[in-house]
Image (spheres, rainbow, N blue to C red):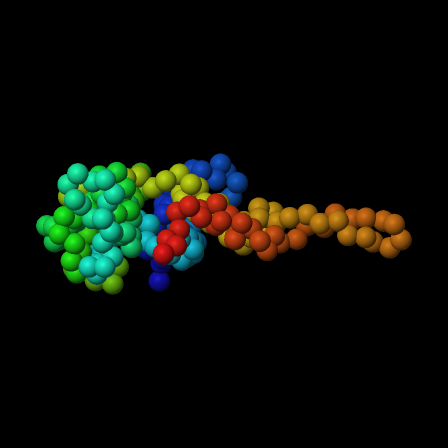
Length: 220
């Protein structure tokens, strides 16, 4: 079965082919299945490292009364609590919970209590607009449109996350093609006093690349 690219993927096949600057022999159309599977797997890898979702999704989060903290010096007597997913895009319920005006990682309220907050959080790719997001279907049930009620356009995916995904996908594809991206050089002694440069897989490439996204991680 062909690998279908979900709306939550961090890249499209067209983006990868364009930004690889002819460094691979892959072409959109004929090689979409290979590219899509690599993007799907890499998206999962990036989200696993970050500990959160990236492209906008609906979420439900229970916030206990004790999690709300008074905002120091706030003239309206408001409280704040951390969102499990961010950036916050839109809160569907309850009406007593709002998005922090300056920090899209936090909820605010004037009525701190146990709450089950239903909200949308995440970014969008540059090719996604509100209409396309509202019409996407659940990959497991094409009768379900999880973003149908989304009314606010999410912010664009940060270049750092997109660029990291691009590098990791290319790393995977280049290794499959036997190319050198994601390899390193070592100097080894051959015989008496002779040195040789040896190309070998850089086993730390993936982790070093992911670490560039450490500021986007969920650390709670």
